[in-house]
Image (cartoon, rainbow, N blue to C red; front, side, top):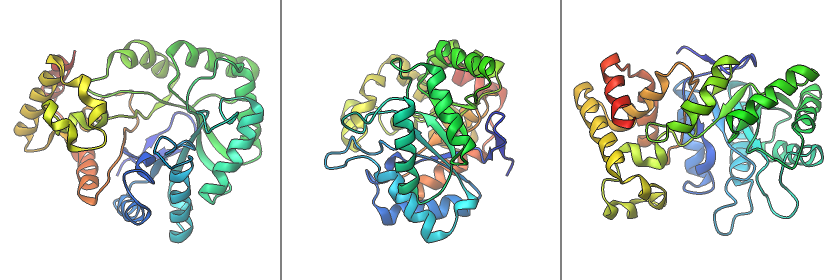
Length: 315
């Protein structure tokens, strides 16, 4: 399998990232272990999580996903075989949020403890922190890199303007640069990335690992009417996509899938993989059959006409 570079970080990964937001939420620890075992056995190697996963679940406090991954890493002895990406910045309760030097120093230790490792391959700012100067945040990351606790840094949910500013500050002041961006991007949600973020990423050789690659499951074709919204816990997230444009996209996915004897899930991810600026989409699975479907997308090649058909439907 051909690996893809994560910017200029020196890190290379297989072309699909496992989204660890489901660990401790929609899958228990035992199922999480089975999914990670199968993911790595198939030749894939990048796992994305965040300290805040899954604080949004009633009864959880955050850190559940990192804890499960850490237990798996320790049980399987696979630390050197995987690229672990996690994030910092979203509220963990009280004053534990943001990208100040003080908080990053605290948060990274908490993540390292939960992950049962002494280094994080890709440490990402989960969202921009307008209250903290970008220079302070980058200097905090620099300290972690020099200490060997972090190998590379990335940004998530930044605007194109703020990402560009962070890159300029890093270059001008000799601070580490963001090597990756984790934006919202998929066949339905295209405009912001393609207009504001992609030009910055392309000009600066930034690796792009988009989240919600299947638009919270909408692009699987699972939801085609309001009655379908009760099919999963994510149903409420896709209600707004059941519009004329959304249905047009599903129709195009159906047609391309039929032509290729494939599925909407595989085609939607293959569309992302075919875009030159995309390094590897992030996608989650809650069962081995779902995981097989995700992995199969990396073996699907779309023709120029198929890509154009999808582009036209989602324009």
